[in-house]
View 1: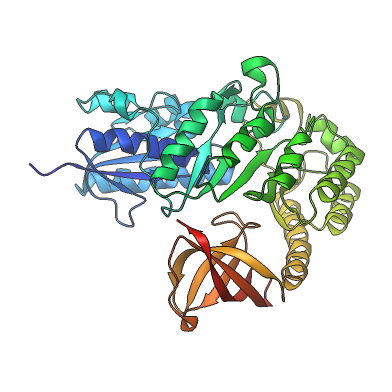
View 2 (view 1 turned 90 degrees about the vertical axis):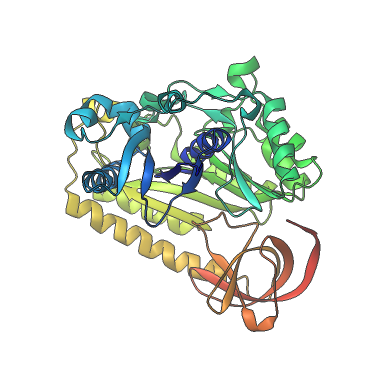
Length: 439
């Protein structure tokens, strides 16, 4: 009997992707044929894993659901299910507005879908995933939820309090993935530097990453989504001391003007931010910092914004993203502040900020010309192999382009590459030799 096809579509962040992969493993074990992010979802069942973080992400999720609801009406798909952050928070509203969806699930009850399909969760597959990324790298979610109460953020309202996974459970997952050929691990959490506090009152992230780095076969570990306040500096010692812990950290700073930080309830000041960045660069030479900044927060003046511009010019972040503030219902900002920065001003500020960062990025990437970088090949695209160094996370950071004419390279293999040219988005390199460790 032919297996029923389930198309799983993941919106939003990599934490959602891990949830999709967990569900897909259970569906696969129950005899379904699973397809992820198909260009043409069709057939028996489609599951949409939604994002509910900011307005643009929510709108993208809603538009996807509406499109699939229309395809269901036309008979191209038979059943449509929705899960994830958006339906966790807006389930009742979605049920009313888009009744074509067969059932909505939240962020934590999505495995109920198995029972609704007449199946059951298979205990022997608990914690296992179908990896949807290229097979040489995977995301490792070490915790769920967040105990921070930033004024603008709806994540704690969606995910609840911070819950750390036990260290041994995480390390066993890493060993299992190494056995499947994974060599690069993107460690993710809403707030990874808080890891372990709910387990024994101590920040355990440095110990966890150190133990992970000691697992044979782990080639790279990259850290995502740190919080600046009470940063555990011992993590920098691990990064400096372990060759396979990438000199890279993703830490959202949001702003630098003190009164804006206070209104955001960030519990961190401008001077503390400057001191933190200086400490990063002093204790881990060559570290690449990725951050996210926000413009147009309620009450942000021209002076505040210019202060942010000056800060970015000083900090020279190797990687930076930015977004305009959008009011999220039930957050502290929505309740206590008026969204009083006009949308056109927000967009103008965002453009100015990113134009400055583009020039900084171009200069930083140009500094790599003449350097030899260890890179991993992600894919072949046209006339180039597309690779990354330890300083780049998949899909969001500059890549290393190696001409195909140089000879055949293997996806998932590590190479030494000499950079000979650069743009603000990518560098161009020639391979010198292949590393002994491959994926």
